[in-house]
Image 1 (cartoon, rainbow, N blue to C red):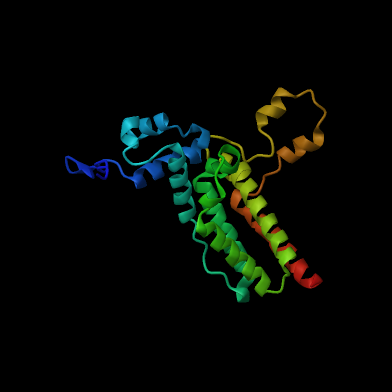
Image 2 (cartoon, helix red, strand yellow):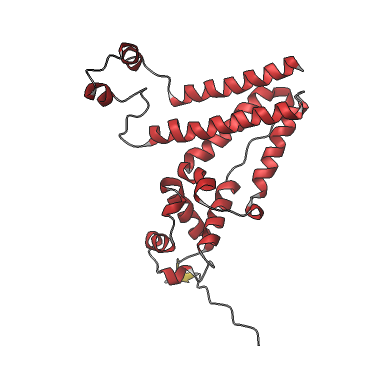
Length: 229
């Protein structure tokens, strides 16, 4: 006799209770702000205001919760169309789409360090978008090694930018966009660092301006590859 599936109520007193989508969204929110190590079944249940037992009516285990969160994050990554006729703008748009994704869930980007995810769990969107970007670079005349090098540069720069610049800048009340905090210089008033003190007094570009500089560096590298080819 087949097992009777567990009942999953959709509403309670006319209100939604719990769904896999709600679980995924809360899990990604937690991972995005605190990292995947913070995502325990007990902590997730507390954030959702339910019991741990209730979660198991919808997911098998924590591994499935992580998979749902990653799937939701990558499903949200939808780069705009890429055109060889306007490749500079396409590169900038692609980079901007990555930045927007990373800014939304910055700590979740460290999943490769925090979780042992199986290769089969890779979201198809990640592969499709990468293929589209590499095809753009091939279509404008780069060979495959040069296209891969440009992609590596862009990916690493955007990832580090999201973690080092965008993340701290978004924290309320945290003045982390300066070269070094004023308190560091005050606490070490006896240090002979005149060049650093002068640099610290020089206004920095905004995060958006710094990101534009980053994208320009990648575009310049691509142009160099085209000239060399």
